[in-house]
Length: 263
Image (cartoon, rainbow, N blue to C red; front, side, top):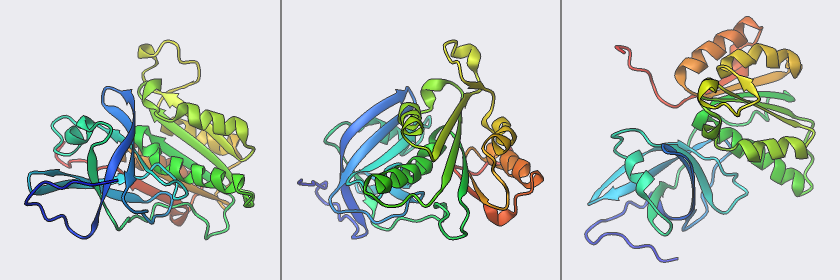
């Protein structure tokens, strides 16, 4: 693959060029994009990559959680178009064959807990906050398919959205649930009046946490909880988990933005 950089632009050595090779529109403001970097990117499931586009000689970039597994040759992102967003508007315009840029160094501590010995994992996400969890469960599944032991983990993923078509990975995650004994997926929508064909859980995703702790036998002493996405959900979810007996070091969080204190 040949990458072209605008004349006069000196691309920093800490970026890879990446070609857009697939795109799936989920909603008018949500889409999944796959890119093929010129060289493999080293990361752990749950980490984020800094993605950018060139505007003239200026690189506009921001971090996005990686939805693909490190075992895949391409990178995948679940993106939301932010009105008047400097980067998301431009990313939304990209079509197959276009090029964006990815920093070579990935970052983030929001990774799968394979250190404490906990065998149960409760994951809670809002909309695009499911991306790091998709990376984690894909990695577990690909390892299992390669004959690696699954190590007895139980993974339970709760995802909330306003409407079902915003869930992004519902079919893939539902198929994974049917194909495995170690994974369960529980989606919910908070605006069922706008989604009349939806027949599963209704309400905000944090409302499912207590029910799921009991349903999936998530004992605080043997469970790591992960919260990703909307900061309001994270604050509420963390309080629910703390009240249920979870220690702070058994709760991992990834906020997708910081609320404006004046709003």
